[in-house]
Length: 143
Image (cartoon, rainbow, N blue to C red; front, side, top):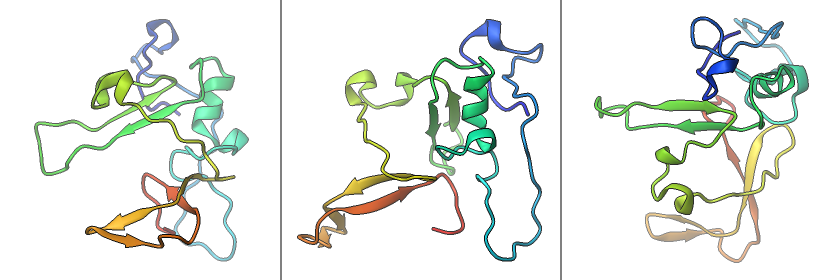
């Protein structure tokens, strides 16, 4: 399965892409009961062979198990959304390295952060109720 370009030219295949050998891939038309999958590409943490990032790392394509998603406004055709594997592209972050905020993942098989204050249209939601887990996902129908 080949998806993205690597920052390191010596790790690219002849088309300029990074490839994972023997990546499990499934096509689903319907789901009955519990379905143990890791999204379309497999970016969830701790999913072993089902994780595209884990396989890139295990097969020496990337040095760190990192994926970066930069979603631009889809109505602004001058901007381009990007995905990076194995590194953080600080050029995609307002303020560069200084603008980067790190949050610990508290999810087991999904990405999640702890939030203690949430505001919607200047109104506090759940203030004083303690921390809540906020699931972070690039596109999931179960959220």
